[in-house]
Length: 304
Ligand SMILES: Cc1cc2nc3c(=O)[nH]c(=O)nc-3n(C[C@H](O)[C@H](O)[C@H](O)COP(=O)(O)OP(=O)(O)OC[C@H]3O[C@@H](n4cnc5c(N)ncnc54)[C@H](O)[C@@H]3O)c2cc1C
Image 1 (cartoon, rainbow, N blue to C red):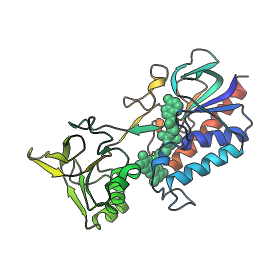
Image 2: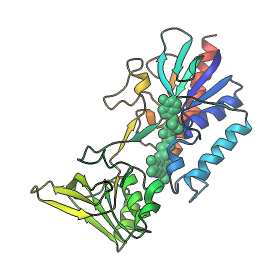
Image 3: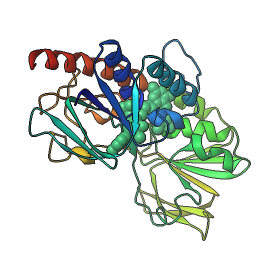
Image 4: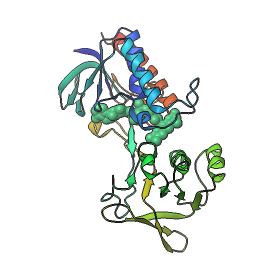
């Protein structure tokens, strides 16, 4: 039995692993992917992590992984499928068997939300993408469409505009939610066209995307735009399914936990994007990981 099991090897989980290792806790980290790093692995550039301006997501993830490895963090490649938190020994059920510990930190992050447009599912991976930084290079010299108005959507549009001939940005409202600095950068680009007050209603083509149909909310008018790629950036969903009915969550499925990471179950803590919080970024995820380990240490001391 371990002192601590960390679920997820993204920034929150790796930060927790680093702090746990330095606290000499007997810890294992469970990660379903073959590489640690979480969402930043797919991020072209992380330009707001203090001290490392313009670093690529992959490089930042590698640096975090190297740091954790240097401190002897053990990662087990396993997908968590359920939890049994009824007794003082917490059981984590995975496709590689059951792991036991006295404390658990859930740092399983979040994933891209689907829009639900007609043709979206059928054409996923055939022109419909949820990660511009991963797939953008396939659309060099082509016309593409981005659906969304938040930071990720606008970052995606700016990134795509560097290589694509034209980028349509479709947004439900008449102003963007993204940070002003991103909006300014977007509006300066000559090959970006805004499609305001509209939503993507269908993605068309067979076997690959050939066009996208958008519907204007104000008058219901539809417009079919010839594009080769459709990038959907309409938010994220927490990866908390395995903890359902075990831990208190909000209506969106985010685990309810404050800065200490404490959840509704003593000895179980939440860190990073999976937690109900204001800002989901690398800098807040790593802070959560450190805080959750401090809370776990305190719990272990008080419940010997
Ligand atoms: C396109 C994009 C661009 C971004 N750009 C920036 C940026 O510039 N700056 C910034 O600060 N932030 C950025 N972010 C946000 C940032 O990546 C996240 O806030 C951060 O990665 C959250 O870290 P996390 O560890 O909480 O979760 P994640 O990064 O989501 O990591 C969670 C990990 O848990 C694993 N996991 C999930 N479920 C299970 C399971 N059942 N079993 C085992 N393992 C599991 C996942 O595989 C993943 O590795 C960006 C995100 C995206 C998608």
